[in-house]
Image (cartoon, rainbow, N blue to C red; front, side):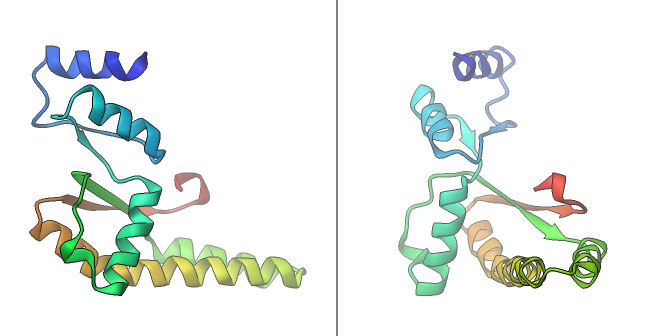
Length: 138
């Protein structure tokens, strides 16, 4: 199994303190945590969504965090501009609405991340942004 090989390599080179592994799929991260509890994992899609819900409901300070890292996209102005241009050029109302809804969600989610990042940093979770320049980076 590939996950056991990853753990073996990390163990061989003594990289547990400097390596974060994971996948957006929850079963992969759960498997990594079961194989070796020392393994630092990144946040899954479900954990990202639940973290947002916990923040909005005020429960985040009281919920255990099982991941050690959260990396989230930071939409560049160029990316947002590209999407807006795409919406304006589209002749289909449905396409325009989908693009505007997507941008609203993306920007709205981004506004939630500052308080989430601050809170998670205080709890010892490594947080970072990666710049979103095109659709292939999602």
